[in-house]
Image (cartoon, rainbow, N blue to C red; front, side, top):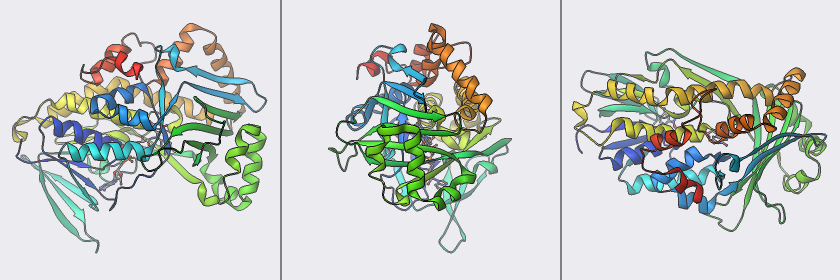
Length: 430
Ligand SMILES: Cc1cc2nc3c(=O)[nH]c(=O)nc-3n(C[C@H](O)[C@H](O)[C@H](O)COP(=O)(O)OP(=O)(O)OC[C@H]3O[C@@H](n4cnc5c(N)ncnc54)[C@H](O)[C@@H]3O)c2cc1C
């Protein structure tokens, strides 16, 4: 379908997944990305069954599962060895799993699929502003001298430019972006022989300290090297002091918390530059669209990675957007405002629940409160030992809840997000 193209700003998970689906549905799509050269870099992420269902729809599940590492449970203990968290995927569906994956693997798979689908991915383009007219939307970019240059006219604009979007504020929509005071140091290291696991393992000292190890699989470049992602949670205000104290002082804290299990990983860390600091923010918008503009992914609803849902939400957004727009019609004749409002209706309950759950749970794992630590340990103990609690925890983990009390139709919802084209059972069999 020719006519004015749809512009997608940002070649991250949300932008590329949307571009692939919309291009396959006959839309003319241009992706505009500020980074000159898209490289397979980034942290390890945990994809949940909801995100895997969308990968199946994209035709990328086999490629991603071949390189990623299956995760069967989330298992966390206190520094005294007391079990705090034990959430098992098979309590949700027999055979289901999370997939630990290098972000670069996901991005490579998405980028190649976008190119195969005929999407025009233009890199080195920093979009600076947009202007909506009655029949189109006009975009401007920043050139190297800092001046503005027109990018062109588009039928609609999808903002997928991440948590720190500079374009979101140009929408006439009430919005809040609140940085979290806590972040994480992370690194990705070869898994030592004998340390292979299907657990995402965490150790806690109250809510103040957390160390985690997540199986992350391998990469397109080094298929035979299994990797593990290592995470250490810390208040951002303590990062400088932690760096000044030196790597050995930090290792001593990790050893005191996680003991021998951490040792083979700590031995591979020789330089503080091997640890990268990640900071996150909470983004909320009153609605996600205004006329011909729609915000998706982290730009629309960034949350802390405590629940491991950000990339999943970005994938589910893409599937919902493709369903809301349907097969390509003449772009000029589409009522974009109505289509984007329909998208908002499809995503509202799911995103509200995960935003609330993420805001509620994050301080239980990242704060200085002794009281919250005690409350968390009691609540998780009770939840582990009754069926309702286990179901609630695991249905939250897999990305399938639409509310605090109601989760009766998760299977149907998974089908809805993926356009009724993927049966849940197909995903859980992989
Ligand atoms: C340490 C850490 C661990 C995480 N772990 C998990 C996990 O286990 N599971 C999970 O599901 N999620 C996890 N996440 C979250 C996940 O990474 C994000 O939610 C997801 O990547 C969001 O994708 P996105 O496409 O919305 O944004 P992004 O991936 O941020 O992509 C935005 C893109 O837009 C581009 N851009 C920005 N501004 C402009 C502009 N003006 N013009 C052109 N291009 C622009 C950027 O260069 C970027 O490529 C984690 C995040 C962190 C930080």
